[in-house]
Length: 345
Length: 238
Image (cartoon, rainbow over all chains, first blue to last red; front, side, top):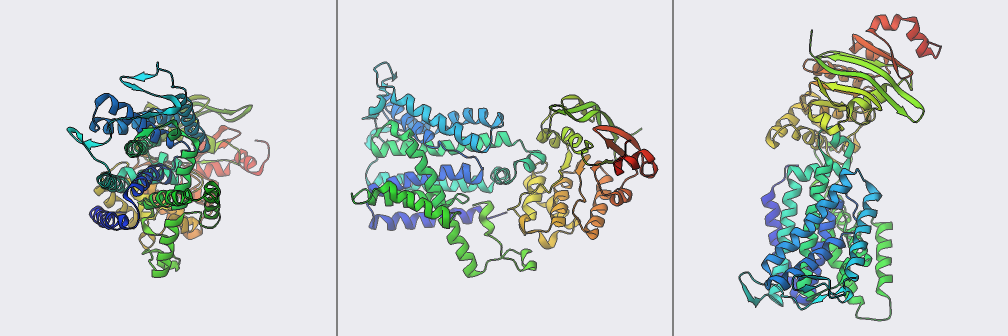
């Protein structure tokens, strides 16, 4: 349980640097940027579902809130630094309020999923119906189904005319994902993270140990929303327009599929699942012979049937079997045990 | 007279028309060890759940060290320093023995102190050889022992155990008895139990439940010799 955080940070930095150097040699930085953003979004759901056991069918709500908050604030402030901060804070506060209602109301399992889904659909409906001129926040018109275009994109802090775009924007997004990954790793290694894993495993036992699971779930849910909000803000900068489709059911379903395919209960799985499936979708979008939704559906069915834990845990298990990593103490029974890192991802 | 650590006054729990616990008055003093016995459906487990905050009683009051805890949730009661073990092993299956005990210790100690306390409990409960094994892989008796470790690591002043010896081998029961006696040096203990041999080996005073009410409360030998209690256990009219 006591792992070396510094080793984790070093590994993350080395792998990130290698990928940041190698990937642009194969794929355009424009495409890589959106894959990174989706990876961050996948990580946000992986954190709350995989480590906190919170079933959330509406993670797109916080992604959309982050994007809209950024766009609205960027129009009003005329620069990007404060809007980026607000894009993290607003979804976090929204999720905290929703979490207070859900977790202190003792909602569990599928009811959580239904509530989060319904909240996302309400936001989708609401934003879609804001086409009229009366729907204005400061100088920003919400724009209804047309969305909000033409806002200030990312700039060097303190200099609104120094835009960060193209390859530079890719590097910013990559560094941000690495930072978020390191922060999530630190969180999961902390007492709070270990307790969250305990709550995922057995809420009653953790409660009998004296832990208030409602407060901890609310905080974790809020952190997941903050990460999704950051991804939303980065998406808004990438696409230069935000539309109600960010809150759509399709968007939420895709995030869940990314996490299922990549693997929930680890930090890397949702990122690879998101980036991999989004890239496949981009490639499929370049042809018209096969409907890409059909292909995505087939991939999901194959994974659910044959690799229910997801790709990354399956590869890790294969690695363990091949190289025979065993836990001390379990060897007395000669039984192979799972990866020790699972509790911390 | 020792301090009263647990008291219920008129505790009643109804499920629709069924009265599972009926006007139960119960008192437990510091460092006392009391077994709750009775046939199936007597209301022992319902009483246990009401006291531990897993259920809220329909009527009556629960006091712990003089503080009313009737409406409290189980995490609030556990935070007082009350160790609770439920009927079925309630552990974190995919985490190791050490991780389980560390999480229980962390609630009351700093991370470093939690490490030390966990190690200490693991050695005391003879769990060192399986400390890194996942709970899901262990035998029933080992899981029960680990759960007792979760209870003990918080240095409780009141321990509430629901059928700790259920499904255990004679050797495991013997070890469990030792651990409970060790715990009893610093904590009052309530044990809900069926196994009369285990009860005789561990308790002096027992409370007999029947049809949701307290039928008798006395020394274990007197209770076992009582004809009414025998009739209740044999299913005859009390």
